[in-house]
Length: 392
Image (cartoon, rainbow, N blue to C red; front, side, top):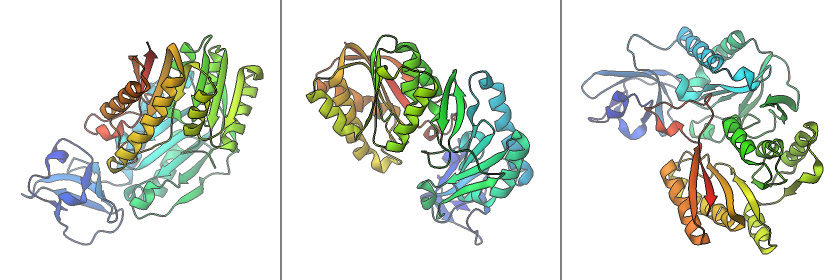
């Protein structure tokens, strides 16, 4: 793969993607997932990468070292390094559920692997990982000692790679549905077969703990609650009351189960199946107010081209949440959209506050947990961002 003049700069900064517009020509006829040698227009070696003929990200880098041509041994080594990194974080004292492989940050672009107790859930999201899928699966079983791997390669992004969706057992026997995990002393049921992403939002682990620390005595509203992660945290933090809203009935049923299993008083909880956008408007007309509101919506902007529509959605929910927030109350607001930068997100929330007639101060910022590392040279990997605001 020969790049156009000047288009090698990003690779020299070790950015792991090659876009289709950067390519001058390709010598040979690589197939989907094949390893290609990427060179600058003057012939300099730049990287070994996985080729994806259907994607705008035409190649994803395996290695920037010419002597490090990808093979099974290299990929096994990357997996072992990723697992060792997580062991070194000491998370086993906090939880039995964590992310083991985080794509580009672990040198395995397009591979996501989450561990829930003795079950691994894998997402194969790129043509390169698809090519090495079986070798990677065997290496995962060997390096973790887990009982099974369940594959959830059913994300929309696979279509961009020219790949179909796939879900089912990859190694071992069928997992329990749902299965229980433990996080900061709380038991949570996870449905790895039908749940969102791999079944649970592990990236919010530290942020759930922060909400727990802030919840005491507060009336809490948790929007887009899914299976109740932030709700459980608020209840554990002795919130006065917790209202949880989600459009998914099955997710709310699992959330109720989680609250009951942890022994929380049902009189402090309210579970509402509703569209959050509509609920926020209705709650205002009903005169409801809260001391702490959590907004953790799904991805509104998978890419930058979706950012304008996403900005309108983020502004809508933040504006209406601020209108429900009592003076001195806290808003924890998140975006997991890769197409919306932290700077843009803050501007959107600031615009929402202005339109709501609310003055607010930033008390803190939220990020993904440490088992979701971000490469300095790959800022796109920092998809989760959030703000903790106090309404003045």
